[in-house]
Length: 201
Ligand SMILES: Nc1nc(=O)n([C@H]2C[C@H](O)[C@@H](COP(=O)(O)O)O2)cc1CO
Ligand SMILES: [Zn+2]
Image (tube, rainbow, N blue to C red; front, side, top):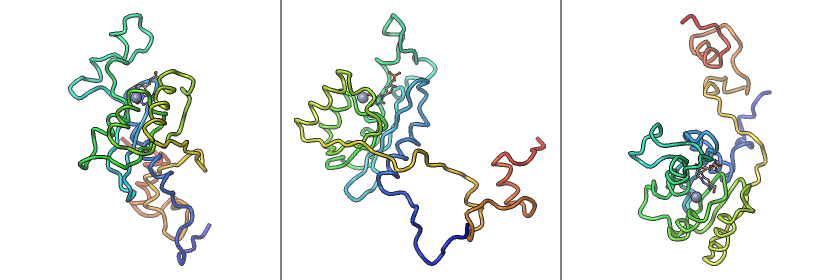
């Protein structure tokens, strides 16, 4: 379908989509085999000031610490060691403080992250999933946020998926379709990246 190049695009990401997608992209870095969580902190000017995902502390190698969750020895489970996405995002901040900021996160923050969020001055939590809503750590977290005046709301996506296609940048600016097979080296490379061509390795 031909693009209208005289008007601004209409299907651009809104702020919530952009920041939640950023949190989900960060989650792709997680080594946790069970739950990959990302968080993205944004200031009042809609500038990202911190990003994090769940992972082992610095100096505690991913391969040396356990990723199990049901071992009878708690020292062999991940829970004592792993840093939550929200904690990492706050610690990774690239500004003096995160007072008045909002945090986008895949899962509702636990009680420990709730405390850190409150103490850091973050004023709003936007979460995707509340699947642990019945658990005491979530209930405690909400009790503390309610008392401290930290707002929270669920992100309701308009679209289930946002696709990132690295080859899209090579597409014809007039159309929204990939280049047809044949032509120049750049588009051949794009096809290779999309797995469309046989690669003679
Ligand atoms: N808000 C959160 N942020 C997080 O980073 N996490 C992390 C901690 C663990 O690495 C993982 C949860 O592991 P599991 O119990 O689903 O196998 O997700 C978990 C929550 C949920 O409270
Ligand atoms: Zn947490």
